[in-house]
Amino acid sequence: MTPHGPVLAGTRILVTAQRRATDLASALVRRGAQVHTAATLGVEAHIDEETLVRRTQQLIDDPPDVLVVTTAIGFRSWLETAESVGLLEPLHDVLSQARIVARGPKARGAIQAAGLVADWIAESETSREMAEYLVAEGVDGQRIAVQHHGAGDDGLESAVIAAGASTVTLVVYRWGPPPDPEAVERSVRDAGAGGFDAIVFTSAPGASAWLTVVREFGELPALLELARTGRLVLAAVGPVTAEPLVVAGFQPLVPDRGRLGALVRSIVVHFGREDLGVDVVGGRLRVHGTAATLDHEVLALSPAALAVLRLLASEPGAVFTRDQVLAVLPRATADPHAADVAVGRLREALGDRELVKTVVKRGFRLAPLEREELSWSSVR
Image (cartoon, rainbow, N blue to C red; front, side, top):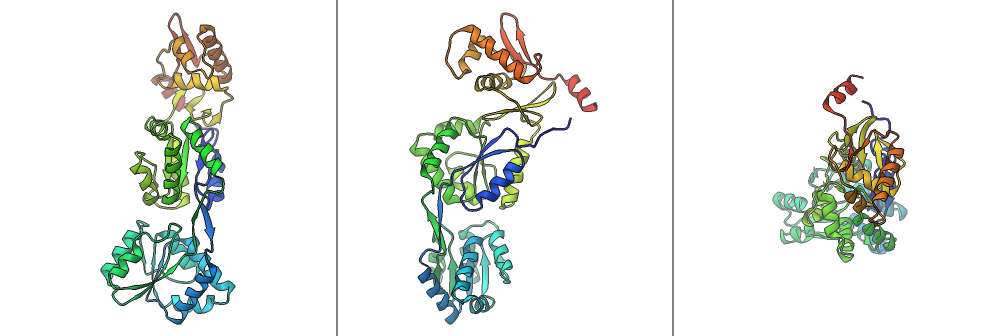
């Protein structure tokens, strides 16, 4: 049986990043997702440009033995600043003579794009690994230039200074407050209410900032329960980004490679899993946070119909009483007739009255395909 719609159809995904948020959102939208963005941190570019230019000139006059590149965006921005003041060519000459250490493949890519070569790459993308490497190689008496990432120094400089090196600090950008704090707060409350299927993180500081807002509004228990039951997926671009989430009790989805493309693929693979959903007449039925799909085609369901379908699909084939159906309706009511109305509207939306069966004097159940029917369906 071949799905008709894109794999992420019916999913609602929150992107918490500011850097490259448009690229990430576009990749998810192309695969059918409804994407919302609420950056938990802002990026303040070119902090104290006068100091950056002065230190760049210092490096040209007194070349470093080692250059540490922690982020692609920071390295590119540094070169752009040097170019704007006529220092790019002499800076490039100096850096071509230095030993260059990169924090991960994105930093290496920026180095290569600049016509330089990284001598060593920290595959874990951690400053700790870079510090351990440099100290093990020996840095006593060496001059090390460190281009910091947005969170500033995280122990790397202090480690190499303790090992006998001198350092030149280059801060090209740093994390600032979120551009729209109210959007972040709304997204956290929405997530706690089950309004998202996935939340995507691309930096550890961003994940930590999100958790701060989550705790402030008391949504952590609800989010942990949604994640535990599979209603919510947290996805991080790499293990460093995932660490604050793990400490908070989540088990985030992390791709094998720390790249945005790999992150998107891991999300697609997760929501395309065969064990998510139930096979019924017409295809595979999946219930998401705010929508349901049949073979990845979004069904036109009211909130009440979706709530009933979520209940029935939680245990396909099991019988749920009218009282159980009433309990999940958005508007509380004790009228048994409301359960029959909600089920009737669900049947109309599904387009096949046989998908939801009435069990006389007991209640309702979702009718999954039996094993024989599944076999025949695959043959067709």
